[in-house]
Structures are given as structure tokens and as C-alpha cells.
Image (cartoon, rainbow, N blue to C red; front, side, top):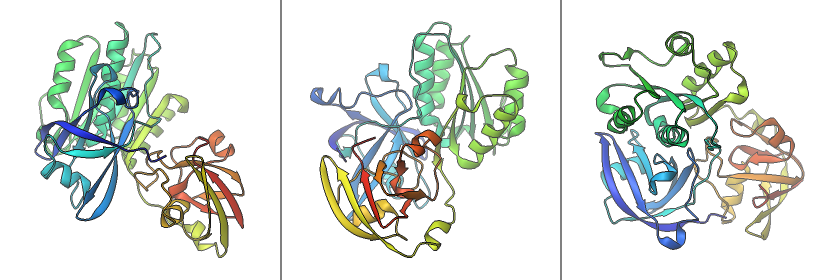
Length: 349
């Protein structure tokens, strides 16, 4: 299931002093495998200082471009992000998992007015979504609110300016900076007042079909709650977390037993016994089972599996819907087994 492919870096472009864009060469025989929908991500794998490191990065290029590009912002004390910004060069080879993810815009030809709120590197999937929205219908409109510290640290600033020039009557960008005062830009952070300014003032005559939110958890919570308070249906608010606070694992505190586990991956079934205090994914990986995973923090969807027998309870879930949970789907990186026996199927998702 962890179906990685060796891809060569075709280009490394400096987006800001602390962010790069990596574009991959896709061989002809893998074109179909690496086709994607706007908003999806890929998982990169590489050995750094003798340790395997996996990270999920959103695709910033539009599907129509024929390119597979991700933007990577250097994170202080980060591992892969520092390596990508300081060491990766054209011609290097990385292991890459095919695109996945649910934070997507699928064009259907109908007219759409879309709003988006992004902060920092949260712009990466929004770039792909915005370009796809704008090119898929001549009447489509897109409003972006983009928060950063300064213009110098703003990823894809030149690309955004180019899109504004190309779609000057249909693409609107409101920049907001927390450490710089700039003409026609807001000062501060994306807050409740920002959302109200956009939806109730500057674009009050727009009938938005959906809102896409991407960035830190606090920003997403603020924007989402404000939109819902303003009458926007929760079904029309889509979000993807790039960072998330780690909750207290009170579930583990109340578990004492052990669980017999059967795990199916790529049509193979493995059996072992795990401590219920352990997370399912951690236990699976300890058994050297090649299960899919990426972030291990509950902010991507790589490790989803289905519980076919027994029960599991998640510490945190901000991805699966209530109906999917009712159907037995779990984020294995967030789940504890709570019964004496459990069957988990990574193939049946």
C-alpha cells in the first residue's frame, strides 16, 4: 500500500528566502499514477542522517499544467523542510507516493464563486485550487485572503500577481501582513473581523458556493466559526490543517489490556498482539508491516483504514466525517484498540 516511486527533481525554485518549490519529472509510464485533483498532496520519503523521514506536501501546480510541484517552507528545527531548502538540487531523486487527499476542488463545468483563507505555507493547495477554478469556467470567481508576516516571506507572490493580471476581473486577493504595513493590504492576522470584512463588506454581493481554509489550526477554527455564525453551511466549508495541537491522550490513560490484531495491507494479512495504550499505527509499524502513513499527526489522510471487527477509538479526528466513522473508518495514527480483538483493513477504504 505504501506505493512509493523514485522521481527525479526537475527544478528547484526559490520562492522566498525560506521556501522552495520542487518540481518532479514524471516518466511516461507513471503519468496516470501521478494524475491528481486540485488540492491533493503527495508524501515524500528520504533517508536523512540515516533515518527514514516521510512528509506530506500539498501540490501547488494545477492539474492542467502537466507539472507536479510542491512548495516547502523551512520550519525551524525541522528535518525534511530544512533538508529540502538547504540540500536538494536538480537531478536528485526522492521516493514519492501517488497523490491523495480529500481537500479538493473537482470541476463540473458549472459557475462557481469560491472563497479561500490561507496563512503561510497553507497557500500551496490553494494555488492549485484557485487556478483550476478560474480556468474551468469563464464566469468563475475566486476570492483569496492570504496572511503572512511580510511580502518577502510570501510564497508564490509572483504567481499570484500573474494570476491577478490574467484574471483581473475574476480573481481577487486580499493580503494581510503581521509584521509589515503595505499599500492596499491589511495589517495583523486573519481574525473574525477579517472574515466579516470580506464576506459582509468588500464582497457582500458575492454568493459564495464554498470556502477553502488552509493553515494553522487556530486560524481555521476562527474562520470556520465566523463563517458558520454568518450563515454558511458547514458542508460548504472545507479545510486542511498544516499544523495541529496535540490533544491529551486521555483514552490511553484508561486502557490497561492487550488486543489481538489482524491487519490487512495489500491483500496480505498479519497477526500480532498490541498494548491498548499504543496507537494502532505505531503498533503496526513496530511489526515492520508496510502500512501507509505520512504525517503521524492526524492532519493528513494517508493512514486511514477500516475496522471490520472489534472497536477502536480515536484521540483526535478532524478529517473523517461522522458517517465515515460510523462505517468503521479510523485514522490509525490516532486510534487505540479498545476490544480484546480487532481486525483492520487498509485496503477497504
